Length: 348
Image (cartoon, rainbow, N blue to C red):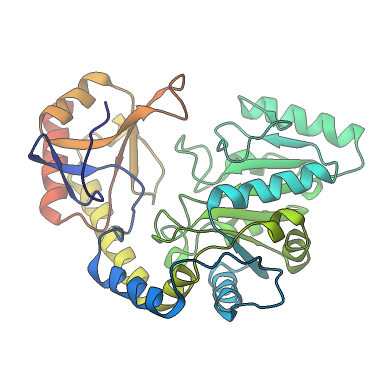
């Protein structure tokens, strides 16, 4: 059931005029309606305007893009970075370019739909993935490409990455979508790039949306300098308008806000875990502020008790119902306690 609302969701939303606690969405750092963050963005809109529609290959270039990309690469731990106007386009750029080069591209189970374009081999199990990779290595000189979500909500990837670890990574180009990791996992929220680099694949690129934890309408790709330069040389990249320069500047200006909000999120996460009596009811990745379950009775009871959370068919109406509780930095200790009390009563 969709709940029509009249403003950006925060810790509370109004449903039929009544306040409900909101534990859904992807605003992990709670920045969508956070006044200090909005003030930074509005000041950058005053400086840079609403939108910059020129190609990044133009003979006139705003230096804020390069400055932000250098900072992001340094933060994440990659040699280089490029940004685009969305995480979806970032994923499409990588996959389409590698496909045009002739690489066979294989998607791991639960890979995001942004990665699984026409021509990608989609697998439904890690055994099938390993078999497909092995067969491709035997019959093709070009390295196969494996796509996966770093945070796939099945608890089969982050934080141990057992799926990729079982592959012959020295013979594979590994592409991770870190949209749900960037800004909240790793040292100071730097995401999964450095963790994946230790697996030593033949090549590694990580794409992500910056619009979830970081509250920025843009996408990014991280990788070695040669690989990023290769992507920047494509017509796809040159023909796409960049992200708003005001958003790029806000990434640089919001470093302290990001760090502070991440600490609040961690506090909320640890407090919830100490109060929750039946954690085994949920599918959960240690260190990630999401808790999935599949129980329509519990879902309905929470709704009736004034708790709204992620609960819809994904990625389309034919997909399974995703029930996911999401903790955010905008939640108060009282919010967390209320949620835990209701869950404990339901699951007793």
